[in-house]
Image (tube, helix red, strand yellow):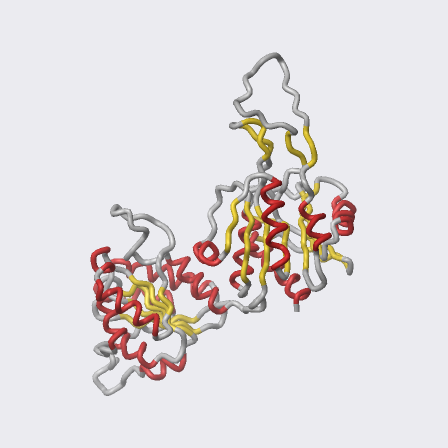
Length: 400
């Protein structure tokens, strides 16, 4: 969503100034046009020629570019931009922005800015914790500015990431999220993700290879497009993005019964549900209370069916709700997916196949087909974030 956007990037005198190069590269790669405005102190940490090479634009630092009266118009920059990003932003610049001290080109540009402003603070922990800094940040928030702070990482003091600048890719993700079309605004989407574990004894279980990555991607895409998201997720090691982790209501479960209980409770309040989890169809009839010791040459497990989450939600579905499922197949893919679509009362089903190597469990890519009562749409192989975008595009057409 950054393609064609005009971004003013303000750089101040912080040791993190070198990371501005990574921000510029990511913005330009996303199709944005970047104009750098740097403070005099910022030039002590990174050279304008480096920044100019990345943006293909002269870097603006002083009010006057030459001694002949030619000057840079901060007002024109404020009208030109779709957004202003100050990264890194020192405690000094925070104070000047909060109190209107217009003693350099960056602050005058900020005071003239008509577009949204994003600020990524960067300073040591003591400066960050000082009441003056905290007061300045709160004041800037009250003006409608967006403060981007880290969601992860630990300092030696044990305080979580405080003071350091957020990572460049996450800063760009915040801007991308801001400009994303909010076509799911006001909608509540439930998503199931990951595997379920069915206990054999306290240390063993029946499970599968699901990583939860596809469900995470769906949750993030829905958040980016304005939805309220409830994510019911089985045992996974993959981490959500900071944006999604902050905004998604996450319910952690272990077994199919846990997921069934959570899903049937949440579904009535939702506009749609996407059942992406790889749920175990069977569980041991009896789970041992103590670790099973190796005795003899064989061990027999008696398996019984788990509750069918998709079928139950299909029965519960009211008029206007949308229910989508996933079908991971190894053979007769289309036929098996069609049967599941009808049997579970789904509105559409996302089909993928283990025959497409590197597109299913643990992978960062997927290749899908979307099957509904009206037909089938096949998609090329792409990242799971790209696949999530395709799936949610289809969902939006059913909710609109």
